[in-house]
Amino acid sequence: MWGLGVLIPLLGASALQVSQDPGEVQVTAGDKVALGCQVLSAEPWHLLRLEWVKDTGNGVLCDSRLHPTALASPIPCTSRLHLAWDPPRATLSLHQAQGNDSGHYLCRVTIEI
Picture 1 (cartoon, helix red, strand yellow):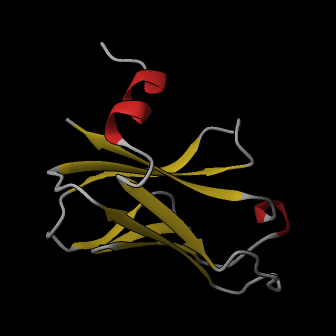
Picture 2 (picture 1 turned 30 degrees about the vertical axis):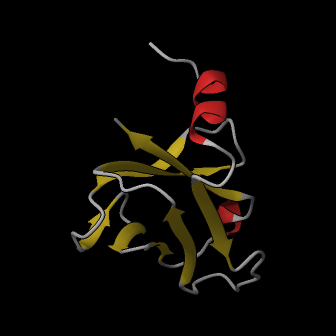
């Protein structure tokens, strides 16, 4: 089994690029929020695990295994969170924002081999 520290040097620094937008958003309670995560890879891939985490350490809010060309209908993660995949972009939608939803959200991507 390979450790993450070993995979990064083997793949190269530009093999996988992940960007999130918007960088910061302020909403009012009850609003709908959409957070985007774009995944670009220098190498072809067949299966990708995408996870959204909040305030790192609070566990995974939503995750899915995705294929590079398959469009995913919105995947319900909770009653208020849904994940959509429109390659190369994943969108996490939060319906009816509440005060305890504030925090830092991170899109975490792993290419599975």
